Length: 607
Image (cartoon, rainbow, N blue to C red; front, top):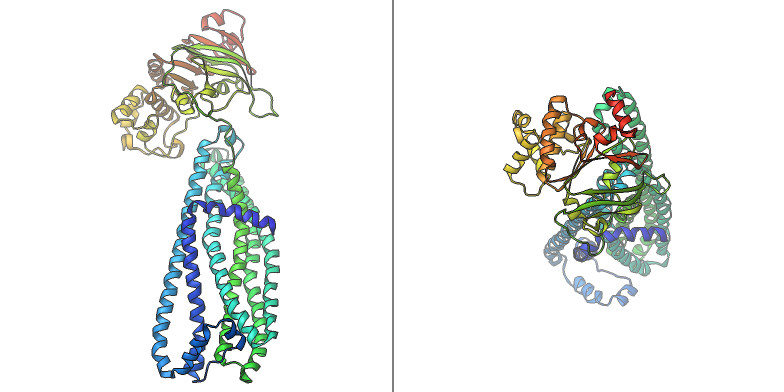
C-alpha cells in the first residue's frame, strides 16, 4: 500500500499547475455532499409528520451531541401535517436545485482539469521528443513512442477525470453518510456496530484484485505499444510488404499480439467488474442484519420510523460510494504504470546539451577543423570513427568516399551536433561547436540526404520548411534552382499538391528535388549533400548537378557519394576506410597512385 500511495502521488503531480481549479472543484463537491445529507434527512419529517402524523423521536444521545437538532425537531413536531405539506415541496425543490447546481459545477471543473492536464502532458511529451537527441530515437520504436502520447495519456485521463472525481466526491459522501449512520446507530442499538465490521471487509478483496489489475494493465500497455509499432511500420513500409508478399505474415503477427492484448484486457475487465457485485452483496448482508435489529427498536417505540428509515437510507447510501471507490482503485492501478512510462520519457535527459551561456554565431568565416575525433554510438560497441583529423576551409568542396559503413554519414552527423564525438572536438572558426548554441550552429548548415524526409503537406509547405516566414517568390525561385519547378506546375494543384505520407505520391527523383529546393531556400553557408543525386535518372541528374553546382558557389560543401562520377570536381577527396581517413587529395592525384580511391574507381568504371 505504501508503494501504491507513492506511485499515486507521483501521478497527482500532473495536477500541480491546476491546483486552484482543483480546490474550487473540491469546494463544490463538499457543498454538493452536504446537500446530499440534508436532502436525505428529509425522510424523517416526511415519514413521521407528513405521512403518519406522529412525533419525531430521535435517540437521546444524538440530541445531546447535536444540540442544534433539538429546536428543529420541536418545531417540526409542533407543525401540522398540512403546514409541512405546504413547505416541503418548496424546500425540496430548492435543495435539489442547489445540489444539482454544485454537482454540475464539480463535474465540469473536474473534466476541465482532466482535459487541461492531458493537453499539458501531451505538450510536454512532444516538447521532450523535440529536445531529445537522435541517440534516444535509435533505441526506441516509433510506435512505442506514439503509444506513450496517445494511449498512456488516455489511461491517465480516466484516472484524473472519473477516478479522481469519485475519490474526492464519493469519499465526502461516504463520510457524511457514515456520520449519520454512526450516531443514529449508537442511539438505536450498540449491536448495529456490526455494520462497521462488515463494510471495511470490502477493502480486502479490493486491494487483492487491484494488484492483479495493475499487473495486467502493464501488459496491456506493452501490447498497445506493440500494436502501434506494427501499424506504424507496416503502413510506412506498405511498398516493401507487398513487394515481398509478406501480407499474411504481417496479418498473423498483428493477430498474435492483438490476441494477447485481448486476453490481458479481458482478465483486467473481469477483475474490475467483480468488485461492484461483491461490495453490493456484502452491503446487502449488512442491511438484512440491521433491519432485524433496528426494526425491534421501532416496534418498541424507542425511535420513530422516520429515524430508522433515515438510518437505513444512509446505510444503503454508503454502498454506492464504496463501489465507486473500489473502481477508483482499479482505474488507478491502470493509470500508475502509464504514469511511470510517461515520466520515463519526461525524465529522459538529452545527450546533446547546450552549455549555460552558449555563443551565438551568424556566419561561417574561416574553416572547420575535426581535431582527433573518435566516435562510437554505444559504450559497448567498437568505434565507428577513429583519429579523424581534417581541416576544411571556407568555400571548399570536400568529397567523402569509401565503402558502405566506412563512417561517411556518421562523420557529417557530428558537424550539426546530431551526435557528439566520444573523444576529440570539432571547431568552426576556432570555436568548439559544443560552446555554440544549437540553433545558431544548425542555422549554418543545410543537409540533403538520400533518405529524404518529407511531410504529408503541400509541396509549397515542404519547400518553405527550409526558411521561417519564407515569401512565395522565394519558394518558387528555390524550386526553379532545384529544377523542380517544371514538374510542379504540371501537377493538377501545382504548389498546393499534397504529396502524401513521406512523399509517397512523388517519384524518388521528384522527392529529392523538393528536398534540394528546401536546402536552397535555407541558403546556409555550409552544405552537406549525402547521396543527393542517388535516385535521379541520367537526364534529371544532369539538370540537378547544374543546380547543385550553382548552389555550391560561395558555400562550403561536403559531398558524400558512392557514385564517384559526382565527386570529380571536388577540391579535395577524403577517403575513409573502417572509420579512418586513409587518403586525401584531388581526383587526379589519387588515381595516379595505388590508392583505395583508385581501386574504388576501377570497380565502378573498369579503369
